[in-house]
Image 1 (cartoon, rainbow, N blue to C red):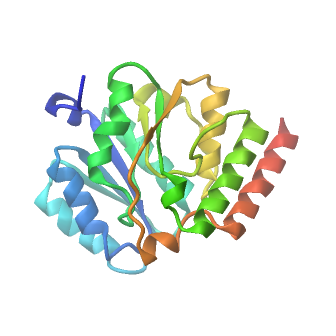
Image 2: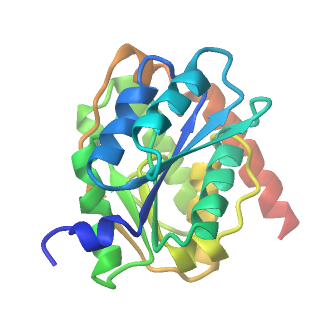
Image 3: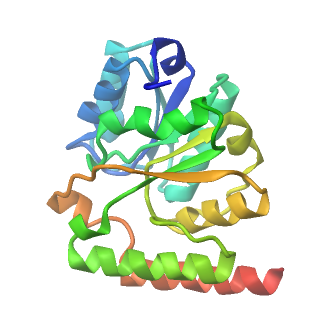
Amino acid sequence: MSDVNSEITKDVYLVVPAFNEEKTVSQIIEGIAAEGYNVILVNDGSRDKTLDLAIESKRKYPHQIFVVSHVINRGLGAALKTGMVLALEKGAKYIVTFDADGQHEIKDIPKVCKPLADGEADVVIGARPFGDMPLSKSFANYIMNALTLLFYGRKVKDSQSGLRAFTAHAADVINIVSRGYGVSSEFIKEISDKNLRLTEVTITTIYTPETQNKGTDAIVGLRILTKMIIDLFRI
C-alpha cells in the first residue's frame, strides 16, 4: 500500500505526552485529529494552560481526541506508558508516539505506519537526519546510539527519536519502567529482548528554540548511561 488510507487511520492512535506545552499543544493535537487519526493527549502534570487547551481541543474533536492527566509530573516514560495502555484499551491496531512541542511533521505519520500496515515490521522509528541537527544535539544523539549498540546490541540510526510506531502486539509486550528520557533507550532494549522486527524511516524534524531546549543533552545522557549500567548488573 502506498499510503495509510482512511480505513487504517481510524485504527491509529497517536500518544502525545505533554508537559507545559501551551504554545503548541492545540495546533498539534487538532492537526492530527483533522487528518482522521485518534489522539491521546497525556498531560504530565503541566503547570501552564496545557490541560485547559487540550480539553478545549477535545470539544472540537470529541470522538478523536482523548485527554488523560497526571496530577504531578511523572516524566516522559510514565506519560508514554499511560497513553499506550489507554490506546490498547481503546482497541488501537497501531500506536504512534508523537512529541507535543512541534518538532514532528504530521505528514510523517503515514510514513512510520506503512511498514506496520504492510506487515514488514513490528516497530518503526522515525529517524531524524543528524546533519540537520544543531551540533550539540547531534553529538549527544551519536553518543546515545553508540551506547545503545554497546549495551543492547542493536544498531539504530536514531535511538532517541520521539516519533515511533508500534503494532498493538509490540506495544502490549514491551514493558516500560523508565519514567524519564531513558525510555527511548529502553524501547530499544525491549525490542531486542522481545525479538520484535524493527525498521527505521527518515523523517523531517522542525527545530525551534523550544524543541532545542528539550530532549537528550549531556546531563540527560549521563542519567541514561547510569541506568543502563544498573540494568546490566541486574541481568
